[in-house]
Image (cartoon, rainbow, N blue to C red):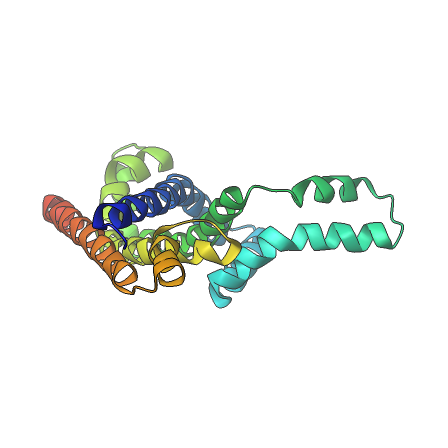
Length: 233
């Protein structure tokens, strides 16, 4: 007989891994997304179109496929190259990559995927600010950088909070995809009991964790929006 405390201990362990994936993805994807957004708005057209092409690929393919490619792809390429007798130095790099930690592969995949989504949100927010705001900054003797950080930035933040909150809540649920490459997370923790004990309720109980965490995030983002009401145009 399965003890309830044993089930929830396992679920909390899985949820801890899901939280790690969530936190690390945000930590790296948000700044990377901002950098990518600047690339997509660059006046240097080769860079602009290259960045847009990469973003199009990432946004147009499933995250699950990206996880599989990032974890298994380099190793398969290294094996193929080794069998073909290639002595290219890049093969040595790929050979070391094929023993890449599964959790690291998840983080790399999630960061790249969400950075591309965030970049489009940032781009829309920045381009949505009237040009008059920048002109007003110039009239006051500010540089472009000063205008952006002192005049434009908080208005951009106000505009992007709703779409960003949607993406971040989606990220909470997407952490379950980590199990595709055998990373133990919340859903896996719940599913384990179906195989070992033939009971379904632990898997259903994982929904409580997702609902509770997303409920907290919804409240937090709601409060942030209210605080930023001052920056309405």
